[in-house]
Length: 107
Image (tube, rainbow, N blue to C red; front, side, top):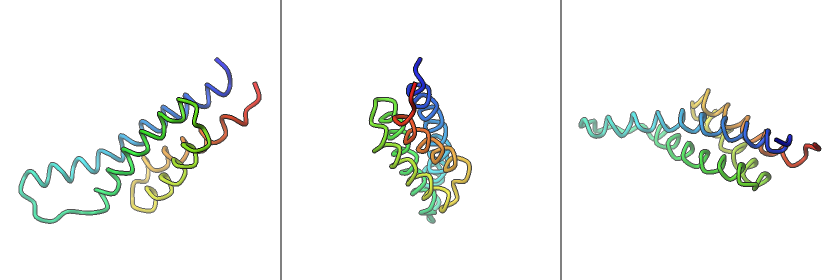
């Protein structure tokens, strides 16, 4: 395995785990809606969308679109940290950094 692929694999794993952590909070909101709650926390719905996009961007990193998907994950990670998805946002941010650095690694 080349260094570039190792960085892309690390970015994929971090992005998927971080995205799942972000999606979890959104699923809690959906379950509250089904229980009959009338108030929806929009921050959690935002984190749900960010988590889904982060998972897709992480797969893009693995498929070779390092710069675009890496930059997308960096931006998503910063937004997620700002809106309260601390652990998931940090993992997505690190995924973006690894994905952005992957093509610059010389094997």
